[in-house]
Image 1: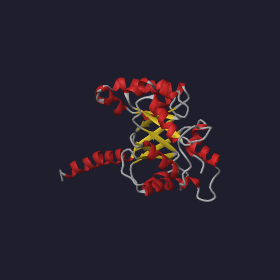
Image 2: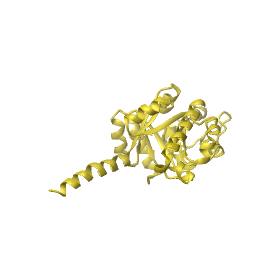
Image 3: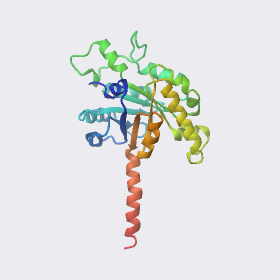
Length: 262
């Protein structure tokens, strides 16, 4: 199938997604069927999963013409990214990179091993080969290369090397991560909100200067307007776990408090 996320990026169009923790494909199908998202992001960094569940997540997205992204851990990123790409994920969000050299290594490992792409990823017999007849090898290499590669910029050193990272061919998208960034600085986010906002703005500006698309995570329409004014066109709307926790805490807590007075 055509990579929907890549197509939107190439056409200069905005994208909207949400984050899913559940491995139950019905959750992905329900979110995709709402029609409000260009792609869904499975948080493999946070959730337990099996390889067949990755296939079913992608199938649920495809049922509603919705793209799919997977967020992977740093330590096992090559294995999980290659398995996810093989079953049809259209984008991979890589975490915890500290510097440009690590970004280059990741791109090498997940790019096709061909004279054009000069990567290390071969021709696995997996779902994206569409079974029979198999695609020609160079057609497959082009499909492999079309997978969107996104990187969290969430370490002190990565922020310091943001110019170099955004200059690397193959880096399609970046997203600033305030929690990991503050931890790498020895800070708490709540004590350094001004500095965190200034750092995120810097990351966005550098990315746009180099033609790399910044993506921002938002929860309110006010945040959308603020990031739009910075030139951001790609938005992550909420997180399955945060949405549930917010409802359970606020609505559930209020009802519990009122019920205790009955």
